[in-house]
Image (cartoon, rainbow, N blue to C red; front, side, top):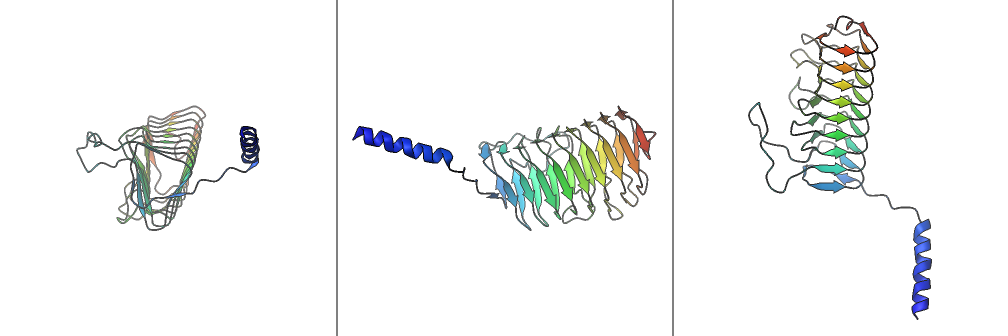
Amino acid sequence: MKHFAISTLAALGALLATAPAARAADTICTTYITGPQAIIGNVVVPDGASCSLGWVPPPTTLCCNPPPPPGYGAVSVSGSVTVGHRSNLIVGLESTIAGNLQANNCGYVEFVSEGSEVVDGNVQIEKCNGGATPGQPAFLSTGSGSRILGNFQCQNNTGPCVLEGAFVGQYVQVLYNVTPAGSLPSQIDDNQILGSLQVMNNVFPGSPSIIDNNHISGSLQCQSNSPPPTGAGNTVARGKQGQCAGF
């Protein structure tokens, strides 16, 4: 009887070894996902929803955010995150995304300044409007030491793109964004970029984009921006071109 059981288990093990692995279902986020927590698979923010990964602090002083309350911590996502139409995503508390982050026709995506949020893949923000208040950023990561190990693309948005104090493992592109008069400026400041930085074909009425104090291993290229961007203090390994030649 023992021999039969062992044989049966061995056969079952062989069958399981050859069967395709089950795909984890997507996690749908319409409010908060609090940590510490590991999510296996992808996260989807459906159309018209707002999602927070980790803890998002209440408004506080300009200097710092308060520590998270008990029971909150970083969220790690083993797959990618997709942000739907008119939807918002906030990533906080050193949360990590192992895949890509893609937002199309969204409100906004924000990395809050609680720590070093990380995306191992690419970040693409396209056709996003900055949310309910016109002129607010379509993408905002400021003062948080965020890390994007792939490419960062912010294009065809009607809200500005703000990337400050981040590490980007490949190229940064800010392209074809058209913001309304009175918008906040797009800002690419104090970043370490291992690829090139391209700021091209953007229209920012009354609010020229700002490009300051970046360390760029590739080139810095600016052209066909109206008005031309402003900037200074950039260290560029492979040359500054076009409207950024003096930066």
